[in-house]
Length: 191
Image 1 (cartoon, one colour):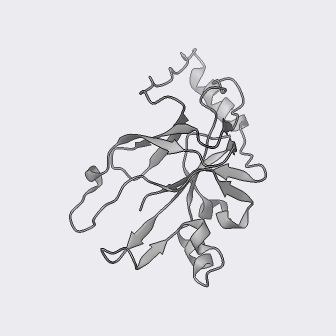
Image 2 (tube, helix red, strand yellow):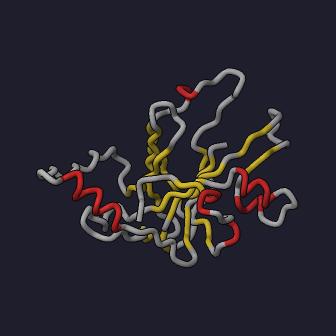
C-alpha cells in the first residue's frame, strides 16, 4: 500500500464519486492563486493545517480536487469536487479528463516501517493535522496525517546493507494497493 504518493483517479480508470465513501471533514483550502500575479513560489512548500473531524470512523485516504473561478465573486466555477461532478451532464468528461488526486493514508501512531499501514481512527469533534509538502516547483503535493500540532522530525531511513538497494526495491515490488470498500476521506481543495 503506497501511502507516500498522490495518485490520479483517472490514471486508475475510475470516478471517485462512483465508489462508496464519505467525507470525514469539510473541504480544506490548501492555497489560492491569482493566475495574473502569483507564481508557483507563491504557494508555501510545507503546511501543517488543523482539520476538524466531522464524523467518527476511519480515514483511509486524502482526496485532492480543485476549483477555478472566472470572477472575483466566485460564482462561475469549474471544479473536480466529486460531490459536484456526480450526476452532472459534464461530470463524466471532467472526471475522466482531470479526475482527483488520491493519496492513501496511514495512522501516524499505529504504523511502523516494517508493519502494515492501518487507517487512522478519528472521532467527530477531534482535531488532527494535515501535513502537506510540495516538491520544489510546487507541482506535486504529498500528504501526511499527524495528531500533533508540533513539527515532527522526518522518519529516519534504515541504513542500507551491501545489497540495500536491491532489498528496498524487492520490498516495494512485493507491496500492493488495496482500497477496500467504502473508503473514508478528508476532502482537500486547492481552490
